[in-house]
Length: 100
Image (cartoon, rainbow, N blue to C red; front, side, top):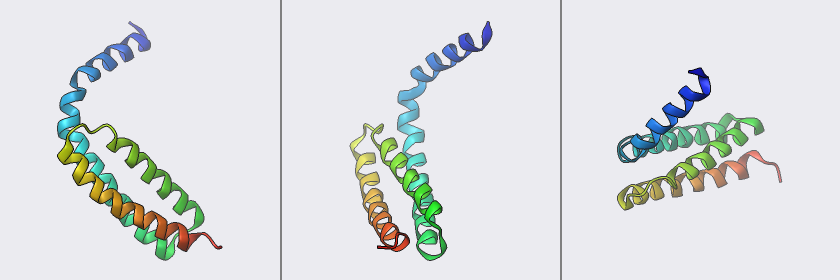
């Protein structure tokens, strides 16, 4: 029993389902995160504070890390395009929000 044992069982189960999870859920998740980032970046460029901008940039980096988990080329390709957009937006937001 115990929490640690349950956690370990859960983790082992997760490891077994991860390949299927990767194929089905991750691409949608990554895409969704990028959509959210894209929207928040636009909002921040208009109204946001330094703190908003930083958390958005952090989210962008997390999205980028998530894309590394995808093994399928077509997913990588699709995500690469949205990453390019997001990267461009991130640079734009950084330029807008940080006084030189």
